[in-house]
Amino acid sequence: MTIVENKNVVLLFGIIIALIEGMITPYVLATTDRHIVLHLLDCIVYTLVAWFWLRSDRKEPNCKISNRLFIFMIFLPVIGFPYYFFRTFGFADGLLKTCLFMGYIILLSVCSTIAKFGIMILFH
Image (cartoon, rainbow, N blue to C red):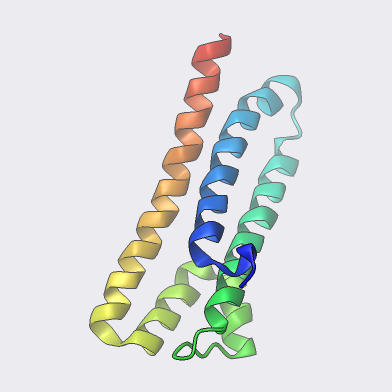
């Protein structure tokens, strides 16, 4: 198992990316009006994080992700992941995993916001 195939490492990488994005955003917004590029890069990086997580999850014996569901989860993760969780793990575990997934999305947003405010306080 490589480091990218470990789901916990992939999730930690997502948090690190959120912190880096939060630190870079104030600088980009202060120096240019092309912040749309930063948002597009965020989307690409978070899509890669989801892709690596799904790739590692596909290798587990009880998790079967079809190619169509895989694509659905990459392009519409807020719908695709809960569908996958409920279909694969049943109602109780699916609900728990969906809540954990939503909590992780909120955690990414909180990490990014904390980093933004930290940088703004330090350099202003």
